[in-house]
Amino acid sequence: MTEATAAKEKCKGCNREIEVCAFCEEPGCPAAICYSCQNIELKQTLPHPHAHGG
Amino acid sequence: MSPRAAWRLESLGFSEVYDYVDGKNDWMSAGLPTEGTNAQHPRAGDVARKDVPTCALTEKLGDVKARVRAQGWDAVVVVNTSRVVFGLLRAKELEKDPELLIEQAMRPGPSTFRTFVALHEMLHKMVDHKLESSVISTSDGRLVGLLLQKDVAAALEKDK
Image (cartoon, rainbow over all chains, first blue to last red; front, top):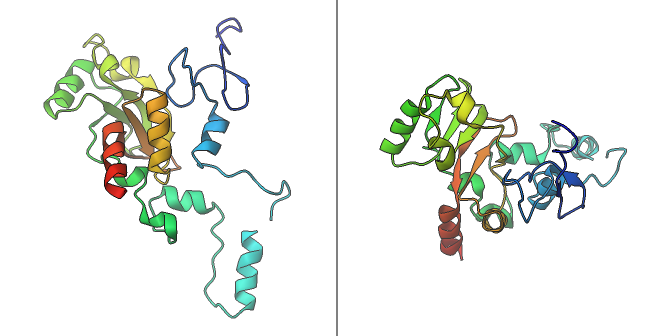
């Protein structure tokens, strides 16, 4: 994939450029979201309170 | 935190203490029981249809389509022999050339969601993204079932 075709969308959560919406994988999704923001929104992962662990 | 909590529990006299290193989310995504207020409400894994048809990469699309439609479905999940999710075909993909192999026709590596995701959050997202179905899998990628938007709405209505 060339740079021209990649990173067309922007994540509505963090504004980062993404190739395709992580939720629906449809090009041009108006609610496009990146994998990381999606996982946090759906609580599939939890933000780590301490970078050094427990 | 959990290793220290485990040691602390032992210091309090508990003799059988385990540190579940993979964490609570991994526990829940395997469909294991939880306690607390939220445990009373159905989650994605409870509502996902476990009888969703599956197929293999090497099958022919025409054969799979006929089988799937005969079962009243318009979606099929592509899995390997360990039921690890490789792909998904919804109605759009099922309409492709019947001579194609599943590997050529499928959506590869579809987004999958964990069993413990709250239904209201899934519904909100599915409506926003106009998605009729989503694949639910364990954290190691094994198929649990297919979550249908209409089932989520019905379950939430019932849970009110």
